[in-house]
Length: 138
Image 1 (spheres, rainbow, N blue to C red):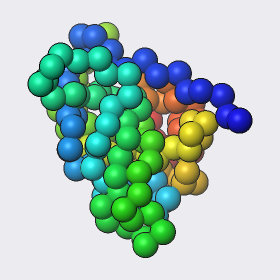
Image 2 (tube, one colour):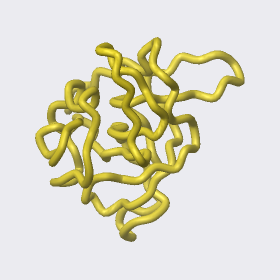
Image 3 (cartoon, rainbow, N blue to C red):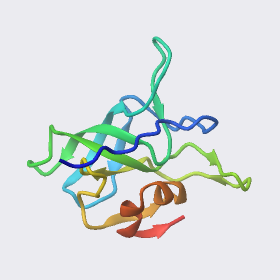
């Protein structure tokens, strides 16, 4: 049985970039093209507050567009890009041109073999197996 993933949830002080039911593009070659965030792991919120996630958070997605094998299925995914600008500890502000996730297996390894486009440095530090197949880390 695979060991449990360490889920830290949304880190305090970061800009809420993606919320519940946000449509995101899938950045890997797992067969999925577009997905919707349906759950955020580790989020402890307030009643009637919409849950949000940031870069490098683990989320549950439902695939809406892609190959017939992966459509209408739920997967765990890691957020690697977000449109909302966020601030790094060194003072720089980063914003990507789309919201993107990478689908991962229950043990944290990516389902695909390559990632299209750049991924954030925060996601690469928190998920080293995702960073190993990334072409560009910003």
